[in-house]
Amino acid sequence: MAGNKFMFTTGIENSYPTIVLPDGTAKRVDEMEKTNHYKLWELDFQLVKEMGIEFLRYGPPYYSTHIGPGMYNWDFSDATFQRLKQLDITPIVDLCHFGVPDWMGNFQNPEFPYLFAEYAESFARRFPALQLYTPVNEIFITAMFSAQYGWWNERLQSDAAFVNALKNISKANVLAMQAILRIQPEATFIQSESAEYFHATDPAAVARARFLNQKRFLSLDLTYGYPLNVTMYEYLLENGMTRKEYQWFTQNQVKARCVMGNDYYVTNEHLVHPDGSTQASGEIFGYYVITSQYYKRYKLPIMHTETNIRMPACKEWLLKQWANVHRLKHDGVPIIGFTWYSLLHQVDWDSALRNDDGNINELGLYNLNREQMPVGAAYKQLISNWKDIITEESYGLVFHNW
Image (cartoon, rainbow, N blue to C red; front, side):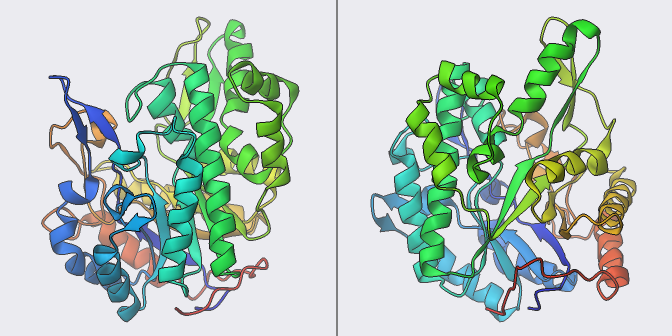
């Protein structure tokens, strides 16, 4: 693969958080199982190929692959990644997507960063030719949903729990990058992080909105060693992070081979009310404005790593997102790729995976019968129209065939 090839991508959604059912029992939510990917993975890869898509956000189910300290079951990974290689589809390896193995507990576990780094290094040793990684998907969302909203995994609801989860997940992300680089020095890390914005509805809400608009950056600030302002530094210290723990991030940043991937959905913008409560606002600024804010902060190459919307608005949303990406590139922002997420319709994301109802969310390029949706046809045509026209400078990132 040439370093100047624009990356049109999709993904096979592999969320696997733990939730609690109404009867009080815990259950692992596995989107690969719900979409029947474990049985139909060969067909799913063929659909990716038929779309003309050369890059795929994809990873093994962490919870069933890392079966104990230093113990791994690579059977599914060996089969799937070998087939991707045969099809000449380059994976952007998604190593942790919203959950950890049962034996590890949850994101409050202080050993998680070290255990995860060992897993990342073991994966890289097994597949040493792979270069593109998302070590931990959506760190900010993972910490918020697990430890601030109380929806997943540890199901806690406090700033202290959020900061602890954020610290552990961000450290795991950095340690994993360091571990992978020891095996594959040309690895590139495409972070996939939710691009958020908070709009004040009233002058009395401005201070809270300003705070939340600083908080949204914390996962990337820690990952990239970006200096915090006083408000965020005090927030972290007041909620359990030590000065030594914060300094670790400033001393261990991995930035040279990073792409600031960000995700944008119609739910990513929020209204903030005077009482501090928030609600979804729908699209106000849009991808262009919010991504420009993130780029101004980190000055890293950009990739649009996730978007979708429910039918029947999919085609219009696709064209709107692509117009935003194209305009960013035209205006000099180094944007290297675009992703419709995901290949297949998803299940139970209408409740943020909190309910195990089996509701099919019509978001994919294909339905669960593996029939192409109108947005799938539109995306295939978009790729065909633009793949030989949109080229990018390498920005120091050079990828090779694997």
